Amino acid sequence: MDIAILIYDGFTALDAVGPYEVLSCLPKAKVHFVAKEAGLKRTHTKALSLSADYKLADLPNPDIVVIPGGTKGTMVATKDETILDWIKKAHMSSKWTTSVCTGSLILGATGILQGLKATTHWYAKDYLSQFGAEYTNDRVVQQGKIITAAGVSAGIDMALYLAGEIAGKEMAQVIQLLIEYDPTPPFDSGSLVKADKSIIELAQDAAKSEFE
Figure (tube, rainbow, N blue to C red):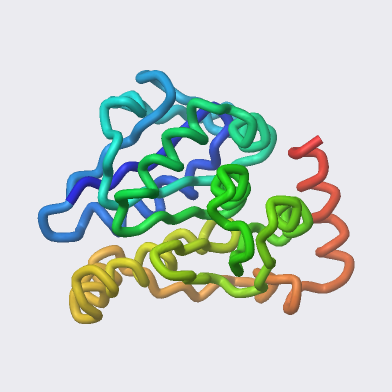
């Protein structure tokens, strides 16, 4: 089972690495980091790089596609025809096509999300609607073989859900235990519903500075 995780300059590390940790535990899974050109790709913080060992052309028909998000780099990727063409062609034969965070904007730019429900990072929900998708405030949204995840850490939830669909709930629970995914955050401000207004305003300012 070939799993292609797209990376590009400006992606968010956990968007890619979270699903990688989960999906790499699946039986007979082969995870490939792919990019327009092979080599190191810098994250949006510029503090970390991941290596794409494969070009997009090297893996035209993966079984699973994972598209991570980011900020400014993601917006650039939404206009990159080489990336968009690869996604469209890969989606035609994939068993599952997925996105994490603002990766749904890249997926949306292909036209694949037109008329479908989808999720993304809360800050980018208005961007998502520009691609004809209906934003849903859920952590994981499935529409047929398309699965979109909300912001950053939701990629782990998405990958565990996908693991359950592929290998069964028991295996997914084994993977969850192996990675000891049992979050008990020190603060209860992880969504717009839970966070105080002052926290939301600060987060909006921080997100705006990353996108603009």
